[in-house]
Length: 327
Ligand SMILES: [Zn+2]
Ligand SMILES: [Zn+2]
Image 1 (tube, rainbow, N blue to C red):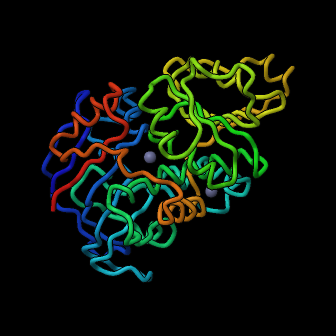
Image 2 (image 1 turned 180 degrees about the horizontal axis):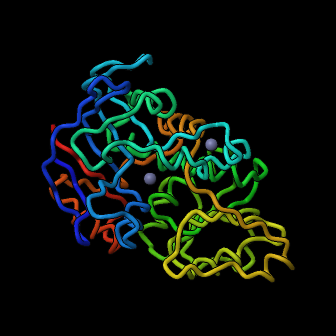
């Protein structure tokens, strides 16, 4: 089977022996496609992942071999995420599932940018679902990233009708804004790129160029989905005193939130990383009901062009890449 691996600062296609169940519990799935996540880019650019690593986790796939106590069967088209919390450790008990050691150690094998993947029984039991029939493969591939947004919204724990600002309208920001609206909040989005502002407006949600924001606008909660350090100033400017900033992206220079602003203005700054199984279920419902629309966000690349998908994403030439893996 073909896999895409990191090799000396590049992503290259390699041939490797087919992955098999060999008596294990779980399933072998044929990957139909896999979204390229911002975290894949970070792992590649900052060399966090070693040579030989297969990135990718936002998969849509078809079961081709199975040995499981679950109801899944051969031929089912499914979505899944990659990590599973243990449910019992200090992190899980306090709601910080993404910090759980078991969560961090579980993964799909070898990774999403591969023709075939092994899913453990634990994946099938906890984080896999049959793909809803009314979603295209590309739409369904947003199951995991939208789950991350859902968790961020829950962690912010704002009132139902709170005023919120989404800073940064890439694919994550556009999903976050729609999910916040679905949770009943009064949503505004901002970005520097006119096309992105228009995309949110076309979804029926208020949006504004950062340069044209009303200086008197104040949000109860600011959701930071921009990967730019300067966006931190935008968040601090538009959060009301006593408000919350939800940090949902890494920034290249790792600027901080000023201590004295947090202190004198009684701000809450909190981070949110990866979703729990319950957030993933909510995500699937938001996609299925089209309360969060993701059609038209992705640019499709064949596996052979995966390096171009990485390059185009890094250079902001596209909103989101989807790697289609042929039958
Ligand atoms: Zn992701
Ligand atoms: Zn745990």
